[in-house]
Length: 488
Image 1 (cartoon, rainbow, N blue to C red):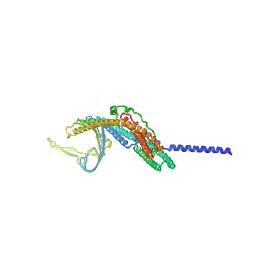
Image 2: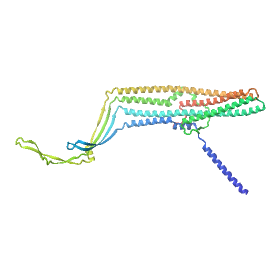
Image 3: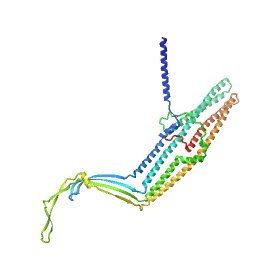
Image 4: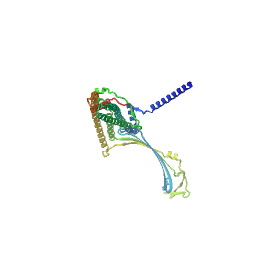
């Protein structure tokens, strides 16, 4: 019986182990995805509404380029008509007015080709190419802005996570402290007032922990909405720690960073492309001063459904009619009269072939006076060009200000982080010293809580200055041409 019992137990253990492994695997599979910074940026670039809207502008510019290409092709238009004339109409066969119903069909083909138009079409094509480049830069600029915002929001989440850990650790420590003070109060070693102070501290720690949890949740929601993430309830980021590294960009001079930024920054590329577009607009407007030469070709044909004359026969009613008198003899001269024989209309295709006609030629148009319209268009184009140049200058000045500001902010953030670390070391030593003094009864619980609060605040300040420094360095590296996201 024991032999049968042992295998049964073994089978049950195997089944239990298999079920446990399945449950563990399913639990691991059901865990929500944790996003890296690069994944957040990639998803935001693909799904952000502002980027989608800017992409539509790029598609519109691509269509405009197709329009510019199409303007070089000839225009070909065909037309056809069929009409019914009912009532009193002239009979095209007899020339008499009759009440009748006649039908006519006509068809034609017109071809036009611009031979010369002041190089306007060539300049329009070049302008369309530049406008498309500008639109592509606009999309890239929007992607960079979204990536920058995502990086900022992502680092804010990491800071809030670290800050929550600090609050949780502090709550755990104060909870242990509460238990110890309770024991000391029960033993009569410390007054009951210390216990009440510790309870108040634990309650405050709970409030801070809850506030940190809410702040973390709100920062996650903010990033999820920026990414246009649908299921943002379970959104979370990877728990990664970004170390503080001395970036090589901080060793550069602000002027060198600015010179590098002028070559690579997208906003300057957009401004330069807009200047080039405005220059083409001036050339297009000036092209209207020149004469234009067009070639044309036209083909037309027609068909009628009325009866036609197919022959003649002698007129039985009036066989002859006088036409004059011979002077010599006085003899009357007559001629024979004929009556037309009517037949049905020719076939449609035969009439089209018989009645077809062609015309072609060239047309020259020389502008002389048009109410100063061309001149005013040129002036407006020149004004737009000057405005584009001023915008480019303003963009360069703004970029220079931003680079120097980013450099100063990064240097200041590094100093703030180093100062916060020094403060933390001092606060930690002060807090440990306060604990020792409290243990021997040299200070009360209020002084200990004060030292503890300063220590916690110093920890939070180190975290804040750390992630602020990381973000400031990322901005400075971005100006220097080091991307913080992979361009797609």
